[in-house]
Image 1 (cartoon, rainbow, N blue to C red):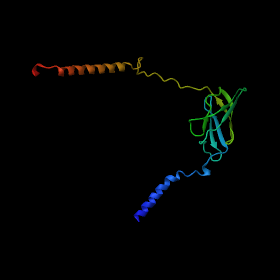
Image 2 (image 1 turned 135 degrees about the vertical axis):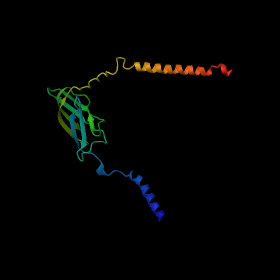
Image 3 (image 1 turned 180 degrees about the horizontal axis):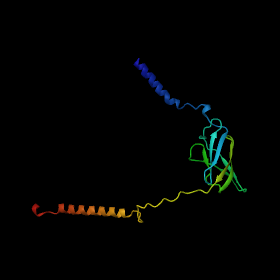
Image 4 (image 1 turned 90 degrees about the vertical axis):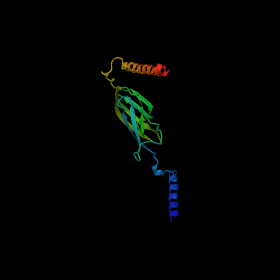
Amino acid sequence: MARRLVGRILAALAVVPLLALWPAAPAAAHGGPLVLDAAGDGASGVTVRATYKKDGHPVDDQVLRLVLNATADGGRKVGPVQLNPSNEGQGFYTTGAVLTPGKWTITVTSPEPNPGKAEVTVEARVAQTAPPPEADPSQDASGGAWRWWVAGGAVLLGLLIALVLFSRQRTPTASAR
């Protein structure tokens, strides 16, 4: 009885790794038309989020050929510019800094076999930088270099004391003769 139970457990454990090799069902596969959500990045670039129209999952299994064309007030044009996959997460694409400050009408398209299109108006701005950090009043103009001098002096003093003590131990005294 116990042997039979052990045999069944071992057989079940042997089957589990084989299930990982089973091909995915076609219903789990993605493809088809896309939903493209485009927006300005807060400066002079554009970001796009690409999801499958069928199930809303982000595009994660392929690199899309997303192409951006932009027209500004006054007739200025940018494009076609191919968007690159972003490190923001799955399904995110970015242009980098391609727009000049002003109001832009952006059109992003994706060709077959995953067609998609987005059109949005964005306000491009000059990229801002963080202000420089304020000076720490606890540090002087030397930037704390005096600490290295103090540490070096302490090490030299320790070596000097060790040499004096070591030389006294090696010198024969009158009582040892």
